[in-house]
Length: 193
Image (cartoon, rainbow, N blue to C red; front, side):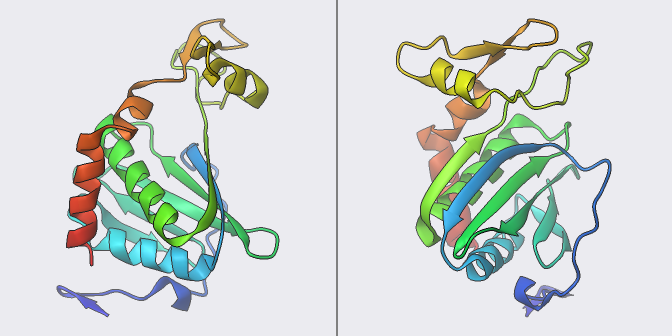
């Protein structure tokens, strides 16, 4: 398929696997879903490729890297699990701005909600203190996160290393649900057909 002067190979034709990368960016959101993973993944990659906000840089059989307009890296990997179930992990370089993160996450989320079944979103949270030994490591206690997010919860957990609060209803979550971001993604989707 030609896109401008570039040939876009559909992801289902890629046979090369992505090698493990020791300095790979941290996963911010994991989606679990049911449905035809190859079709869902391929259409997501192709549609994102056609947006103005994100430029496709590398594509593999089960992973795709993109960059923002200022060149920071983001992307996702697909893992096929039990029969018909899959996991899509969305990652960002640390210097990807918040607006690009939210827009990319909302685009992926809406795509999965439209094309997959039983979609579950798992957000990962990190200590924001660069001096903390746990900086860049995901807060792993999902039970504490669920309790803090439940009605009447505090909306935050505390870093087990430095004790500083980690807000769960952060700017990303607030913007993710905003009508303005949803509308921006709708416009991207209609331009990405």
